[in-house]
Image 1: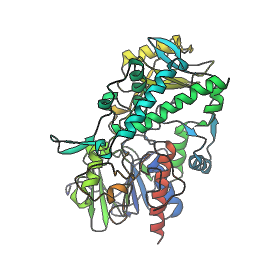
Image 2: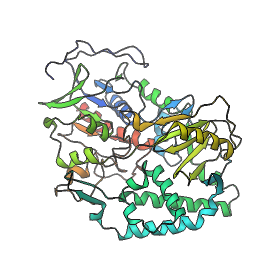
Image 3: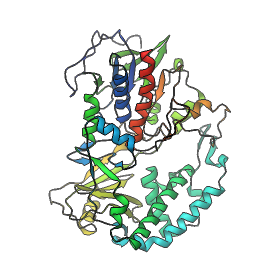
Image 4: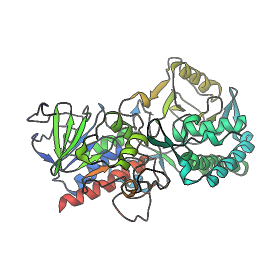
Length: 478
């Protein structure tokens, strides 16, 4: 590392405008690694708290936004804001952004044997599968959620498939589609700990069936809480970047190494070196692990935290999107043939996939016409967005363990205090982890929080950046 070139001037130009340059030997008040929603909102919050703070965001890709990505008006990543997500709506309003409700006049259907079926036809299978998963949840002991692997000498999540030997064909097909959507993986790789999310989804299906029976326009009453951002998620990302000092966001800057020296950190990106009083990491754990970014012993990463970084990695969904125009919008569907699910909007039908291919994309194009009745131009090509093939998106939901008290994990150490407060602060309150799953519904830097934020949404990504940004910004003012 001593041979790395030190630049006298950091000069990266991005679309936000003219550069605000700092000398390379200056110490930043905060360096944020990762320019997704959480990282950008952390930077914005620090800047709002303390406009004089020197901050920068280092983004590995050539664009900001993380797993939100608007291309040609189609969302390739996260896209929804729910009615109950008041924090997200407040943040959007502060940025001058508006929401638009979904146009709902479609249906929720199934695809079986290449044909369209009604969800009502799956009622008995949904109810029986729900009961079986509930029984598994009630009968599973904490110690069963992980198992020791003698080859790797580490604990791993137990698989749920070992407890599902008595499923019939319909139940298994339904569960496969849920696992693909909820866990971004195949049923064989789904963890036992994900059973609660699967039960929740099945209960949603049960409500759909009930509403269809009793309410003629049931989708309007059920889905009126979902919104999209006018201008797409690209508008949100742009507004966050624009809220920061010119040049504070630097793209094409993958971080290779972080080390601690005395009272500051040194961050290496290519042939550039940054010094910072605080480091906020908004990158997937799998990226940290694969690139060995946090392997320096000076960071004093505990065994518990190291375990989480190395092994607590969520999968990453892929999408096949068929751009089309529809008279009716089918809002949600289960594909029992492929064991997956998806939804549609006026500009396209999104199929959730694990291993997308051109052959599968061509099949989806035909389904868009035959099953959904969509109008597809003959020159249209399906979009394949395979996040797992992007180096810096692999396991983008991989901050799943952060901030969550994993009392069910049978770790070799009894000291789970650091693990239970994964979202920080570490190293005397100067090292933080943020992301859509890091808060576990609560502020990572407050002991109590009466208004928990549910994880796994764009809102929770924004929120995790907000609470850590508040903490760091407040400390910098002292």
